Image 1: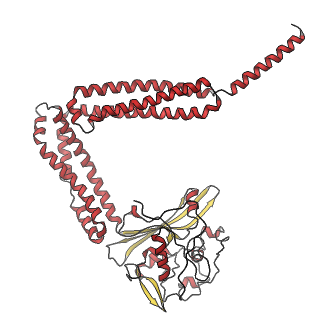
Image 2: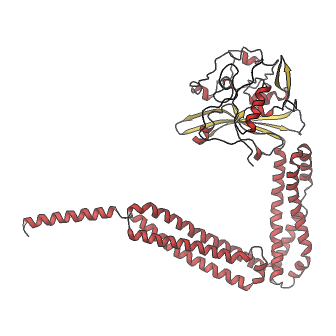
Length: 507
């Protein structure tokens, strides 16, 4: 071969190598081919397993048609098996489509292949899980029917558990709660009736099956009679387990009616992707609905939160981000941020409630907390309570009934009073981590020192400029007189939140 021919051969070989390399880059990765092969094999195995289960269940139903016809849901087994088979057919269709992608073998279709693999795997595993559940249920009934005489003592035990269950204690608790909270009577009665119904159902079924139970110990029953006793066994077993649980739930619900609680956002901090909130939970337990005092406790805890949660509450420092009044269940708590403590104020026309009363002085109406709730007041207002004006509270109620957060307005400026931008908040939480990290620094409404501490209505600690105003110790700050007259506050809405929230109760 001449030198010229050698050069041509080398060039041709190089071009061929480049073409082969480029073609390889456009193919599906080898790992994807392996996944397709693995799922194809798994599908074949699942089809065989589901087929075997179908045959077994069909044989069991064919051997005892009366039993399965009379059993709860027994007549649905074949339909459920058919549903599992349909899921397997969907998986098989997915593998057929995967074969087409594999034949084309284009790297650009890799994402579509992965999605199809995931769908095929989901259908295959669900079909096998459904079929296996049917297999276990059918086998259970067949085994129970074969050992029915041995099950009679178990039924007796479960029946006695249900029949002798003491509902007197929970009945007395419910009756007391209904007297204290009449608006809950319908719900509590319904729940207690459900418990009583379990006992009544067990008694009725037990008496009606006496002859069958006696016969089962000495002779063979037909399929329908066996099914009746097995259904009784299932009912008694479930009721024996459900009664203690349902009674405990009812006890918990009635207890919740006697406790109010607030979750206050008292501090927040962020660093990089780490977002945290400090939540103060204040609970007040009442002895009864008319109690003039309650047992007040509180806890505080820093909690890591997602960025979206942190941003959605950025404007709510010092606010009650959740409030559950006495007479309601925990699931009915209000979840929209509102100025802490305002939810405890009675309507002006009502005049008072167990927490305090409306007073009139110097031409103004303002709210006064009873002395026995001084601790509650200090915890809600971070030891810096400033009496609510009647018109301010009415504005708050207007906002809350519309499902909106109320931030109020400082009477001497356009600044909000509550929330992170609030002039009151910046004084109450001046020692917070948020404040020390410069959180208030960029506020257009940064409060000026001394604006309230010189007021004759401030607490002694608040009037002392050298005092430590951090929330470290408990104290009482009962006002001696009302604030001076001021026009009804206008509403303020801070910058839009990253995730708007709705007002209402979550059940």
